[in-house]
Amino acid sequence: MRQILKLDPLVESEARETRAFYYLLLLALLFIYGVTLYESPAMRQPARLIPFTLLMLLHGTLH
Image (cartoon, rainbow, N blue to C red; front, side, top):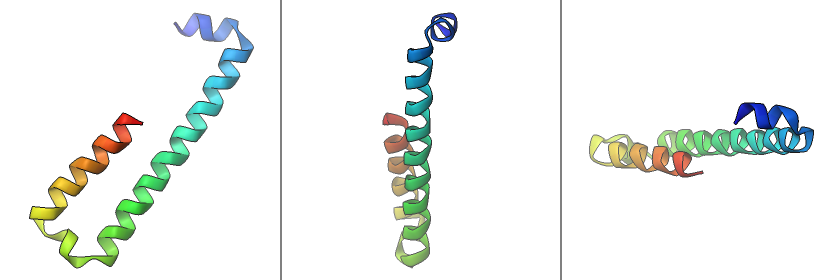
């Protein structure tokens, strides 16, 4: 698969743009996660922290 990407400059360029968007999206999710934990002490309790963390990981993985 990597050989195909290297042969076609257009595909390689589109993949690079997609990767950049993905990293930006993950950065935004991490920022939201951090701000939520900083601003809401209730979210730091294990009963809420664990599901919130798992859902954020799932959200990032699905993107």
